[in-house]
Image 1: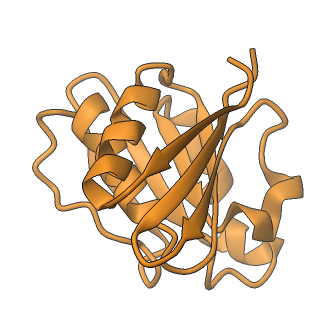
Image 2: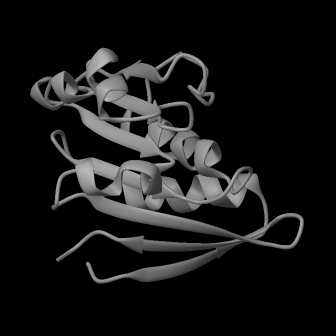
Image 3: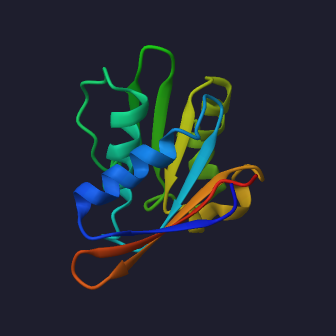
Length: 144
């Protein structure tokens, strides 16, 4: 799918857009999220989890301090990374980031712009841009 754009008026719509886009994701995919603080990246992940892991009971929240949150589903898991506090590639190794690629789940990264060159070339991308208090422009590039 070539880049598509969406408009969200609130967090619930951001979750709905994510749920729709989630249908194009599969185990083994990496989804890089881009956007400033408060853009709605975590709300987007909440929508992904609702769609892809409907039996997951874990509350979706930003892993800023934990670095990674794992959401388990019946068929596979989602690994939600937040790079905000990561300083360099050595930090990525220390949190075992690269090991997650062998687990067969979906990897979602927030603050992807900080380590864009270290993410897989075939990653899918979502950029969220604030528009006023609640509005968001969401740009999704899932490649083919």
